[in-house]
Length: 278
Image (cartoon, rainbow, N blue to C red; front, side):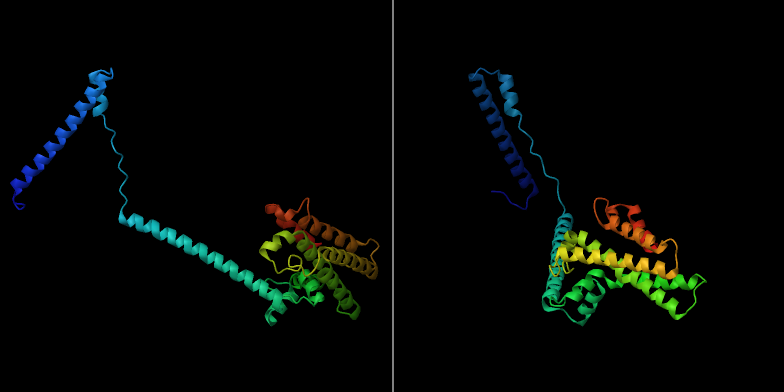
């Protein structure tokens, strides 16, 4: 027995333990060397193989701070993912409840203007068709007609000219812009089924055949009004009619395949401006 408080005694015990372990290793090496010699292996090779002990690879030490940072990062990522899923579920629930319940007054107004988050009443087909035409997008075209007429310096505010301007606004807004919006929704129906499921076509409130018939009638009505305006203005060449055809064609290739310019890069933003100017 040794006194555990005596440093010299502790050193002696530690030395004895180390010596004992060294003796055990030496006995193992000699034993393996003798066994190898019996099998026909040279003693030097047996001893070298016996003494060569693979060194254990130590794993790099990971500090407590590093482990905490990793855990915190994983926890934040899981919470963010859970938050995104919760937000998506809430959006889907709101869109579905808006379609099923008819929505509030704010949802009905958004429906009439064709804005996002609109609610749709299934029995009001005219609301569905109006939503498909997105009246909120008519304003720049209608305002552009009035501003263009006033800025021309040749316009006088007579009842006849006011009637011509109102007819031109009707052509530019509800008919040709409505045509552009309906055809855009028709060719984006698969994408809208994911991003905007409350839209009339992906929600099933209007069939694809009805949507095609609607944009064909809007196009025909817009071109017809353009031809009437040319005759009313006394144009020998129907310039308004030609411009309406050009703008409608640009709107078509912007939304419809095979070109579908809206999928392109920077040059895909020019067709809407050209169509509006026309």
